Image (cartoon, rainbow, N blue to C red; front, top):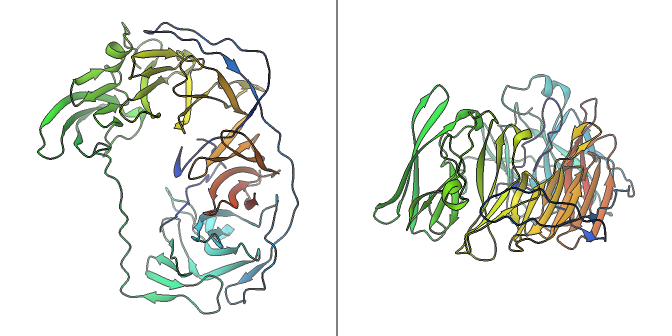
Length: 475
């Protein structure tokens, strides 16, 4: 299985965001223990139905240091030492001019990563990350070994694929090699290697496979892209809904993309358009303008208006698989954004929410997240609030404040988040049991990946002097 996790903060340092996704890996969420505090006042606006939720705060614990330990580094030919206890550290297991994690073995015994020296960084190629040498960290012993046989010129060269038999396949520009981590024997070339076929879902197909979406860019005039999008039956191509729409290329690269996603088995939402607002392509009702038909707005805001913002719609998924929800928020000049709105298709209700920004992922376990963006010490910070999606008019709870990065585990029962750049906190979701706290000063950190067994979390950090560190944090 390919578990390449090598995207990362190059140049100016760490860029902290949110979902996900997850990776994978996209990814974000802490938990909480509610405490009795003063209820804040929710902002108001006037969509179809205005429901002003109440807001309560929850306690977020500060991070504290845990026991430190060190690990040694050996060459590939050095035999693996006898097992000892794995390190529990808030100091990096390795530092280098650049480090990127590649992935865990299926049994969580090994972590593969690429470590770059200054020469690698100085020779880095544009539009890539630096190259480096493949390394392995042993969770049983805490030992590190360098696979000096594998050195890349950029992060676009070299891939690591783990097998279930203890063997690993390293794919390099000159071929694929097979071997075991940290053994004296070199990896051997696989002359007849064929990469495994990975099944991927087709985003053009509806969740039940009955319908297909087709979106084609037709023109590009002075940065204004024109698209034609059709919703058709998957078996015979009968067109049930069709829309022609435009988007400003400043909003992103739409080439080869559908411009939206399925909101339900029969409805596809186009996130935003230049003049029409978001559009819903419905297999039964045709094209539905979201702002005028669902939210009943009289005026459609556009980027060309004096206020300089438009609205985008993202589907949020709850317990009902046949009903969709749309979360609408602004894009453009943030200072002019109206409060976010939440549309419930099952009953047509439109909620006016207390904040203007949503936070990825939009829905986790039927929760929805908003970002209040408070000003802290003169800078805009991230403060994440949460509420159950179906709890119309319900209480919003503070999930975490001053957050710089988040990572969910695969089944969304645990969350790792960075607070104040150097505090790493791991806790369960949604009940908020703290499983670990670490302080990584002076490294500003970002969570990268859980181990498959959930025991470890990989965190990468960077110091002000641009030195990178790799942290392995144990629950």
